[in-house]
Image 1 (spheres, one colour):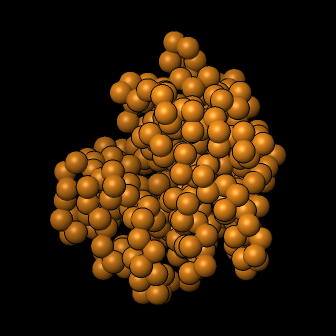
Image 2 (image 1 turned 90 degrees about the vertical axis):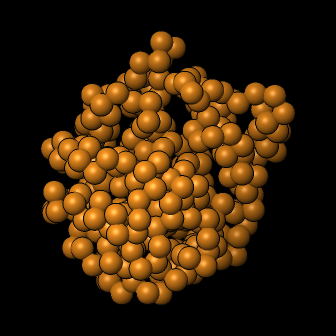
Length: 291
């Protein structure tokens, strides 16, 4: 169900930090034109922690409306409160989305059984809505272990894992052990999409494709068609850019990079701020080299 290149969409803001609908529409149209397979709205890159609840649902609704079936829409409806994640998922399901992205509970640091019960409750709340598990221990302070992922994959509507564990070995163990025909794994890190792809991933949920959608799709397509010579060429061409996307806490870096290319005003909501100083100069140099 989920294969290819999915853009972890930024949330564009006006100078007064309200949602910039015009910029949002322009961004989505560029993604559609580039042939991206889908969009992930209200994830980490979309600054979900800074969105008010009505803004969160409104963004999901507007992205689904603008996409209008031309491209898949995945809504980030996760929370560290199971009840809140269930409520968000039920509300988002009304807007005709193609699935939800559910982050492993953060800050609470639940046990593996607690993680399983959390996702199971969300799964049962909307049984017909596909779910992507999101393992990102660098942000949640809790790794979703192999056995937990395998148990969750047995649930009918759990059809994908976004793996941002940073571990190729863990990815390979999941890929080898989960025996479910309609279950895929997407890389959650642009810099690792080639490594994951060699070992069986179905694509990437990309930060970099906010700025370079056509190019990241070309890289992903090369990986999925086993054209590793071309994939390697593109990977190393954009590797410095992939690294630059995380010079500062995501999405500070990608919004700053987009601003440098005239694709965004760079506005972020506190506590996130634009990148400056040495990192900013490095970003400028990387973009010049790409040009």
